[in-house]
Image 1 (spheres, rainbow, N blue to C red):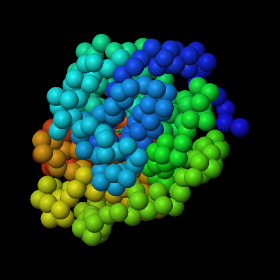
Image 2: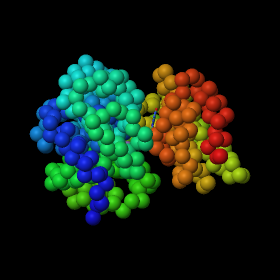
Image 3: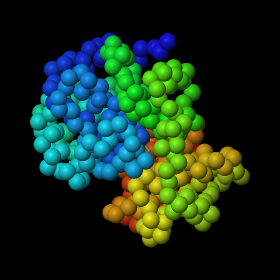
Length: 342
Ligand code: 5GP
Ligand code: MN
């Protein structure tokens, strides 16, 4: 039995918002990942099945090509390409459903439009410190993924029977990607009860794994080799390797024909070394340095990301940005990283 996570009044307040709405805009975070896309597409499909019309999914920028197969992905609107269309949808929607992000800052230019929108707002998310003014906020940072929350939400709304195979595939994808294929934050028995239900709905987990994790270009695989051989710097504490830092300049990224999604997973690799429990990847972006932080166990990185790198996230997986040069970001990091060991 899957226990009831949401309080009854949370469900009824969310259902009231859904009942009253006709048009719905589903929004998710910048550089959408498997959980962002999976939860948004599953939710959008669910709302369509409930008779909501029109239901649009909006993303701030492109999602990686290994998620193109997700049912409904090709209809997703991308704000950096279809700005006017997205603005109109946000302005006119009766209901705005915000999934897998905790602050308007995480959706780029759509943030101000969301704040100004007249429609009701429903947030379902698993990041700490929700900071979106909304009519109903279902924030559960202990959940593995927003996909888990969407599954539970549909079930607790009494609509498990509406979950069909395409929805199940979307939900499975987010569970899988946000737990690194069930290798971290994945020790909850309920998670496998949910997976079991999804398998019964015809999800082929091995096929989904292959579609998501085995779709890289040769250049991407060579980039991994380059990172590990040439670009990984290791730091010791108490005579053991504890932290790995990988940096990539835009010139290096060009050399490997870097595409969105290619950095996925690289940041976790230094933690495969015994005793290493912190790992950082910094890469040069158009106008900033994009930084990913990962850690294991009781070694939080989100506060550090927020304090020094304009970021945040989860305890063991956070991100941030640095407005300056790559060398500047490295220098600041090396100056402050001692705090991670305090
Ligand atoms: P990634 O390193 O995969 O880009 O991000 C890992 C997690 O860190 C994301 O799920 C998100 O919660 C958080 N995150 C990434 N980038 C940022 C950022 O720029 N600002 C904030 N607040 N959180 C971020
Ligand atoms: Mn997520």
